[in-house]
Image 1 (cartoon, rainbow, N blue to C red):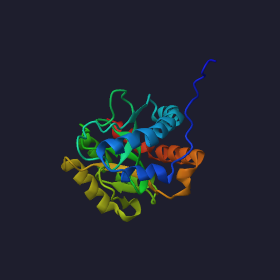
Image 2 (spheres, helix red, strand yellow):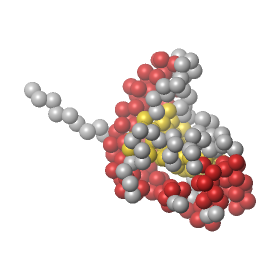
Image 3 (cartoon, rainbow, N blue to C red):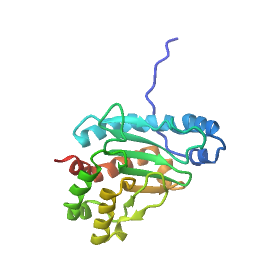
Length: 216
């Protein structure tokens, strides 16, 4: 009998996925990430990569965090990314979907490895009205992809936003992540179709900022 390969289908996240981050030890937790979460990341990538490429106007590639630098401490989160470079994503503006133990995040991400961080910050500082018009009030902003904390965009007034962008420009380790977070028990995470629609809507909303950050 010939085996016919089937395309991966994303059916949603469960509490079991979030419980991955309670598994003790580096190797046991990495095995749980590989067996529970990464197949779902691949299914999400299969469902969204073509749409992301069309929205971005360039080919986008799926990257799944492998946590290869970790030798002792188990990862407290894990993620996938869409970026325009097949070899890597950290040095480019990119889109992330990932999990901590208590929430899922969808970010447009500018992390500290980004070589054009200062230039991108200057473009955003010159376009604060556009940012305030584009980013929905209920979205959130984080300044460190390794931490859970984030601020509601609604709580950033014009001057607070300028100050945040200046810190992003001037302090090497300060990052900029814009998007949405969902509690682990949010029903939207349990429905694969609804989740994919929410992810596409989120990234489509943020795409004008992505294009702005690439402009010269």
